[in-house]
Image (cartoon, rainbow, N blue to C red; front, side, top):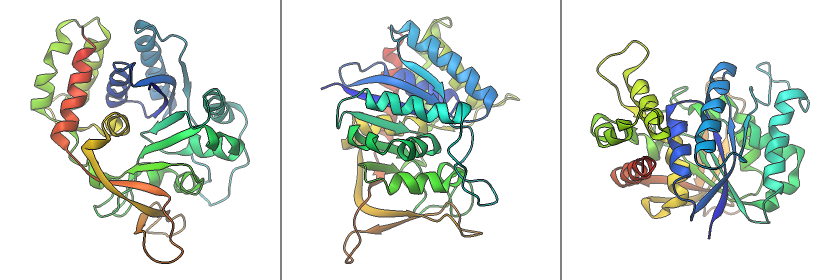
Amino acid sequence: MTRPIILDLTPGAQAMAALLAAVQVPDHVRVVQVLFSGEAAGVEAAMTQARDLLDRHGLADVGVHAGCPGPLVHAGGAVKSVPQGEPGLAAQYLVQAIRACPPDGVTVCCTGPLTTLALAMVQAPDIGAHLHGVIASGGALYSPGDATPVAERNIAADPEAAATVMAAGVPLTLIPLDCTSRLNADAVWMEQLAPMGAAPASVAGHVHALLAAARMGRGGGNGVDISLRAAAPLLALLAPGLFGGHLAHVDVECRGTFTRGMTVARRIGPPGVQPNALVLERMSIDAGRGLLRDLLLAARK
């Protein structure tokens, strides 16, 4: 069965790699919308690259839009009114794409803050019935955060949005840093992808160049490993056997001065504690990188 998916990405080489990998398996997933959230310049460039990639794969009808540019709550703590203009449009585009799918039909794969999805759920609660699930990269349960000592950057960027999604009652798979901290593009993996760069003008060649440039950094250098977390939700959807985890109730700290954005998971057992997420706590890193490598190499054929 082909599953419709929506990719909610942050701009970058890793996002392009995840999108390119997703369109290589039309018998398993069908991309119906792509969103990008982040700084305006980066979003515009990513949207242009994504439209070109989709067009060259015969998917010009797939919508590519900017996501919400900022969090649901002002820095001072005041909740925003439902935004108009581009932020409101971002959620409306997502609502329309979800409603166009059959009940229990579409999976949303999120690799950044959950702002756009949370706003869509607030504006249109009925979309929950159309969601087969949400798979999100976010949180740090037992490992240090990468935004603060206790908070992972996607959750820390908009804790209220994360809390909204987790309270929505939709099937949620959470992939924290604990699971993906070693899912990186290292020198060996990049060498395996070298055939992608044989045709620089191709989509595969362009994505390979983006990955290579990201590893070298703006100033050049010997190359540093870069995270491939952007591909984790897709990998979890395509190959759930690569992962292991448990059901838990996950809360997001939205108030603490030093703990804002912290995610806390309680295993099921105590009375009154009901699961709201499947938390993936481990994965086969080598197998995951191998699957992503094979999907990207398939793009050059």
